[in-house]
Length: 163
Ligand SMILES: CC(C)(COP(=O)(O)OP(=O)(O)OC[C@H]1O[C@@H](n2cnc3c(N)ncnc32)[C@H](O)[C@@H]1OP(=O)(O)O)[C@@H](O)C(=O)NCCC(=O)NCCS
Image (tube, rainbow, N blue to C red; front, side, top):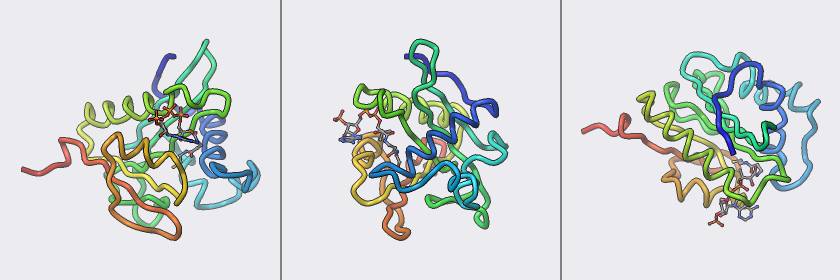
């Protein structure tokens, strides 16, 4: 598996991965819905902007997974907003590549990247019942809030922990 940084050319793939994240339990949403929903579009429109970061995982040169974080202002935030300088992550692996450690390696890599960039932390939103929660807990994310049927989780980097 290879990992490289994501850029604007990856947006069609990130859109597919966003759909996987929305549909983690069952096929509830379509690509057309993702494209038309103002809140869903916040995760994609204008990526990568200042403060964003993202990675794509490839197997045999084909993208199989992505993780990216958006540093959005409070008034245009996603579901897992904590602060405007803390990017909110979306993570997803194509179904055929799951269960082989791709997701956990990608998450570890984006945490490394956030630390290299001296970002104060990373946040995310995870719906009740999603087994991805264990992945996040293992990486050090902690629950800091609640929104609807989802927990907001935060990982503070060394740069974010004040002495
Ligand atoms: C969640 C997801 C990214 C995990 O990626 P992955 O490559 O399959 O994960 P890994 O192989 O690295 O597994 C890591 C851990 O994930 C957990 N896990 C993730 N999905 C799981 C599932 N459906 N069932 C059971 N465990 C799961 C396991 O605890 C596993 O830990 P273990 O190795 O101790 O068993 C992937 O399942 C996915 O894309 N799901 C749909 C999108 C989604 O839910 N995204 C997160 C939105 S918050």
